[in-house]
Image 1 (tube, rainbow, N blue to C red):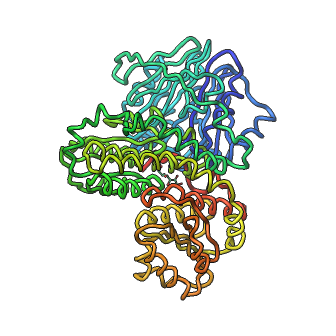
Image 2 (cartoon, rainbow, N blue to C red; image 1 turned 135 degrees about the horizontal axis):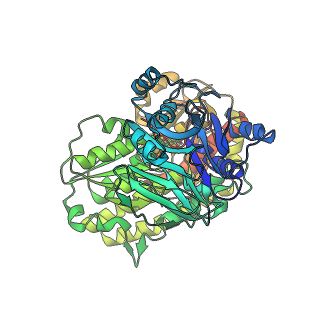
Image 3 (cartoon, helix red, strand yellow; image 1 turned 60 degrees about the vertical axis):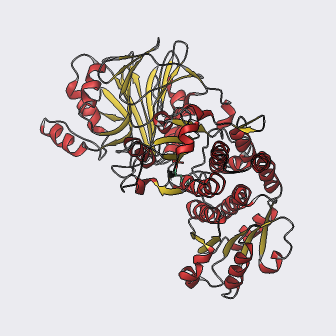
Length: 607
Ligand code: F6R
């Protein structure tokens, strides 16, 4: 994880670094620091959230036109001021920030210590500073290049040196890094929002590339010295899109942005009554017709989108789908043939296990489609085809609007596959297209009145355990409801297929364990009602997500969250929204930081 930012130009770099770090805090937030060239190198680092660093800077900030900054999510070495970045070499003349993991850092550290280098932290990053120091012979770029040849693992890094006070050296391997192109000033960052206040012209560094960034420009080469001429991308995100817009937290803002997120994601998916897929050039009709198996690989919330995708693709397109957690897929021996399609879902596009699964699948001959919210992210650059979700930047660590956008994207994919394979009558596809287009308004209807959800949250916020149940398309919704609740409120919660309840979880039931049941109308509705009876017979309170107009369910449940009537397979989108809100309100009542839950990071770039 971790976020890095750097700036070189005429203006004082400190406010630029701090603004950038604020936008990157979602990547890590256990400590932060900056290094500024001001004749020498001045470093200020603090344990804790960015505001600790800001406070420290109030009393004596360095000032200079070149600087680098870092917000950390600990991997090697506990969160502490010593382990916070930037890290220095022995002389204090060279500073490094790094995102990633240096796998061979222990061996390197021992070698460097044997040569007399003295370390001040437990981090893997510090070896980079000492290694560059060791290699330095009057040319910083060459020293960094020589150093990274010895590094194993993943890194996005930036280096500044007192001896070359007119440049930042930035390099990337398997961790994201972008360059921002300004006028008389240039930037580096882990992610676009960090520099949006200063420029909209961005270059996405590729793996194994190194850049020399000066006031006047950027020069990119590969690690093997081949010159790279990369296109400048113009970012059209609204700067305000990364702000809270009056909401108390990013999470609430992002939940409320869901109608727009879905609308934007499907904006160009339906043309003249047909389903269109931007990635169609890679996924030709012949390939689609020949497919005999689809794997969906993803982690966490994106995995739940994958489960929804399985239901839609199997039912509409008639292709068998297996959904795998990426960290399992990459290490097992999946049976992949040339007629296998792999769909990798990752909102960040940087999740290490999903990226590794994608590589594994491609190495075994599968075509891979990436579904990601981040343009230029690693999985999109390595996949054969891309479906972008257009949710805009998601700052809250808990995924909300990116989830519904992923579901919308995978519904579109499923319809496209069905269309090409002629697996459904055209009239049925047309009906579903109309229903997909109606989804944003249905989400908006759920968001319009949250009073019952808030009341329910007040009633049950003290409970120590929840069970979430559903059947069919309700299973991933229940799993997502449980995941959201545990990650932002720290209440134990389990998401289960309702039919499995009798095989174990029923033992947990008692008055103090509320059971949230996804009971929207569908072909297993009666079975879900029976499960509700079983829950009630064990004294647990039932909270139901139900279809508008279902009055009977009020007899069964303590609280009912109504969602608009939607075809069964599409109902995952409206049904998940009340569960996001339930978690949100419970977490707020419990005083939790919903945007930055403990121990979690937005982008999991280590396995
Ligand atoms: C939960 C959450 C995580 C992510 C998971 C995958 O709210 O955000 O479970 O869904 O870390 O992340 P991406 O989609 O970026 O691969």
